Length: 74
Image (cartoon, rainbow, N blue to C red):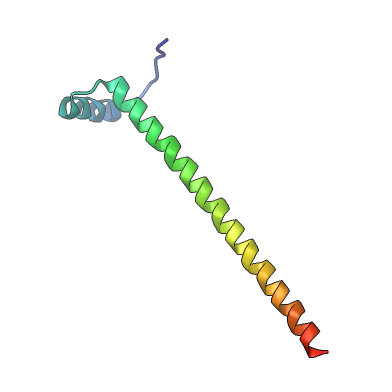
């Protein structure tokens, strides 16, 4: 079922130009754009979580090294 969504005149003009250039319908262009946006959000979140994991692993390694240094100093 299709729904109506309001967009600016400028966005509608751009969407129409893209439809002419690609031969795709406006609906298909918007669906593709939404899919790409969702993928971008997923990858951004995954990258952020990976960075946090890497940072945590570095901190744990530094703590382990500090403990080993303390043990060795005895």
